[in-house]
Image (tube, rainbow, N blue to C red):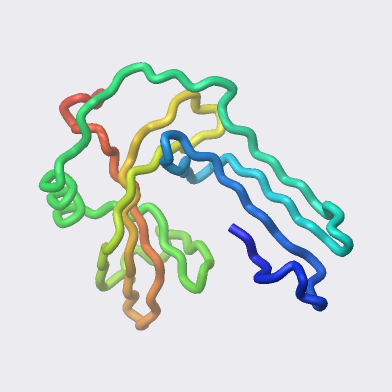
Length: 158
């Protein structure tokens, strides 16, 4: 992702390049962890800032399991949607404060990603990231998302 439209823009003072790691073309998501490289280029193409969150040293595929079916996913999000995040105007909102004010949810996108909830976690879990819109009682709308474990329930530890 590149935040400045043109490096030839005479008014530009900073350009930001963001690189995110992927495994098998799948993003790595998480509340506490998202490996990345950010480079900020200033005037005369000098690096003004460099941020780096490392990925794993090694990645080993241990097993493969069947993923949930479309029917299992639909059943889960229609009977008990557990919203993972809500953003209004691009800002993350604390769910515990507004969850009771959500009047409607509309999900319109699903993608398979790897999820890591703790920086010290040594494994990646495949999850479906399901996103869409939420409407609050006061009429505000925001981006809403939920993470749903992708591995079929019968293969998960209970």
